Amino acid sequence: MKKSVFFLFFLFSIVNSPHAEILDIGSSVKIQIPETLAYIKYKNKIKENMKSVEFTREEIKHHIFLFNQQGFDLNEYEYLISSKKGIEWKKRENTPQGKEINTNEMQGLSETLCSKEITDKSFYNCVLRETYKRNNFVRKFVVILGNNISDKIKKLNDLSDSDIAVLTENEIKNVKKIHGKKIKFVSKNKLLKETGIRNIKILSDGRFYIESMSTIERPGMKETQITWTIPMGNRTFTIRGDCFNEYCMYMEETMAQIIEPTFFMSIRNDAYDFTKKEEVLNLLGRVKNGYRIYKMAKLLIFLL
Image (tube, rainbow, N blue to C red; front, side, top):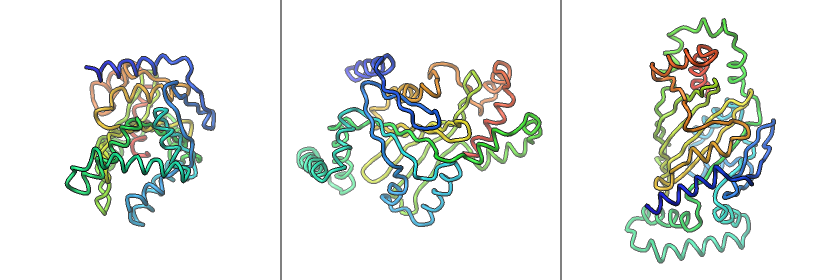
């Protein structure tokens, strides 16, 4: 009950914050940092993250290729958004003195809260989890805008109505077969696992984006991850939310608040699911240019 009351208060303070900081992250794309949160801006760490879970050269090369296809050159700036206490904890990692403070804290937690863990895996998981809880870093968001134009999104945006009209059912079926809505990835060393679903969400005004919802397992951590991939002009704009399961309430509402200056959406408003026949029929009947949007949405999940 107390947790529910806390999250209702948290949601109210996020949505109704009159003092959110507005950031221009490039190409007229803006985000806002709610008053109760803080952020760090830093260079993209995708390569470092892949190395930290010991991806093979082939895996790293393959993932870099996929990112490049979306218009990411891996020199982008990322915006990490979390609680003010959590961001201060992350900032300490940038100095030797701060790292020492964080290390001592982790050692103290390991002795007081995690000493009864039997296996190395459970011990490490306990220390990391308790550290995150102590520093209110159990919910975080990452925003990134691709530096380059995505050739595939540009090709999609350049399609004429006649180009879309001649798309065959076989082409659409092939897209669905190759890039279905299920996500399942296991790294060769088994240190990283991802399972989930990917789907297109189409808003009532015709805009659309890809939503991925996954469970991520890596050494010492199991999190829920929500990602929205949004075509922004001919670039890729993404926001990702990470949370421990019991702290995942209202993640989408906060994500929507962060991107509101550029991509306004109401989580509670109708969003059409293009995999469901009834909703597709509603889309075609209610949304202007619904047929074009429906066809483009099907291709988008293939392109990204």
